[in-house]
Structures are given as structure tokens and as C-alpha cells.
Image (cartoon, rainbow, N blue to C red; front, top):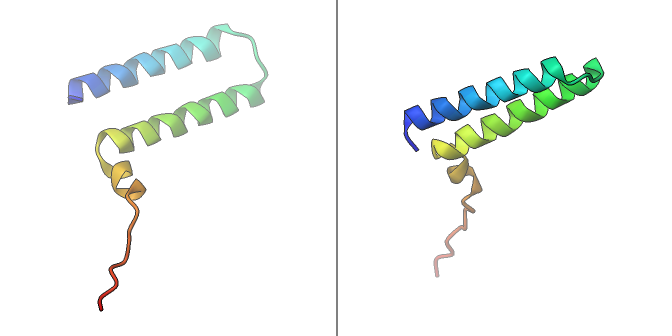
Length: 66
């Protein structure tokens, strides 16, 4: 995915999150939880897009020498 695509996704997610938290009436605690979940998901997605998360998911298998 190109940098332009990443930026576009971040802008769309930010605008949708702003619209939801602004125009849908909900308790402040629920808004904080929603924002936290979205931020965690975005950070995990960015780590996967840039290949950092893929390195963390690779199991390390030790070699046994005879």
C-alpha cells in the first residue's frame, strides 16, 4: 500500500470517528472507549502495513545441532 493510500485511510477513519463521536449521542465513557479501540486498531494496522507486525508474528524456532 502506498503512502497516499495510508494517508487516505487515516483521513477517512478520522472523519468517520469524528462524525460518530460528534453527532451520535452517547456517554463520554463510551466515546473514550470507542476512540481508544479505533486508535489501537489503527496502530496495529499501521504496524502491519509497514511490516513491523509481521516480524513480531514470525515464530522463532531454535536450531538443534547434533
